[in-house]
Image (cartoon, rainbow, N blue to C red; front, side):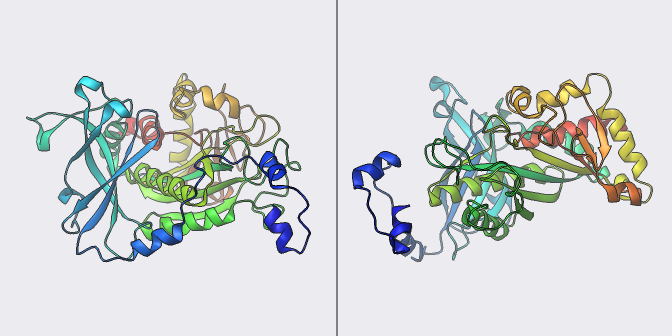
Length: 397
């Protein structure tokens, strides 16, 4: 803030000590200059490829490490199986710590452009010398395997997903939302949704950088917007078919976290990051099948509503829609702030206060899609998309 005052011709009257007390310096105390890093990024790689292997850790966090390849892979099957120390990620005991990484999807690496460097999304397995490629059973945190089994069973129905990922930017202290006064609150909600202007839109540089990074990587990111709470944003991934939806959402989260790392801010996927009269953060999941998109497909959508509202299904889905078995969503799905209560299922046309919203044009055209508004912003996309297919489509397979 002092720098801004000087730039505007305002005399700086506070001492350095006062400024430090007002805005405490957090580690790391020595900041790395990305311009210096960029000099090395321009160096020739001698035909080698840097492959960043990415996986989900023991607490749902994303992890990564880099492997050098001699040539670009022609497909994901050309990539080698790799391993990591699972005892350091809470995914294996120390006496048998090796966990194997199986490549699942490839994206271009926006952080290492200029060469055919790649991001490699992986899932995790126990080692088995007698298994195919040395792979054993999937480890417990590998939720992709079961989701992929469901997607294979419903493949003839051609499921499409469009996921709306909401998130909140924070200062490095992880307590102050980006753009908020320290130890205080901004003005009430109203001017921030889809906003412009220094006084309303906080963190657009991060949002724009992430947008470009996703498009460069090959992720089907279909849009962005500012959200209702200041410092909160949304981007949409899709439409994607089947298991590709979960893959692309996880890759997009990885890119967002890496972009925030470079800007020195923190991203939170907590579904209710600030208590009180502030909107939470969701991961609304838009769903359609070939039958729903066809002429007269509204009947298939109504059939899905019937199945989602069947006895016991609300409890099943709420438990699957955040990593804490529904506890995170209890803070968010209160019936206020554009949510329906987690306690009961509801659906409606153009109603953002329902569990599931059917768009007005879908009702008018009698075909289209529905939006499940219950998934939390920190949801596992494999569990959520798999669960929706399991309930609404799998009974017909």
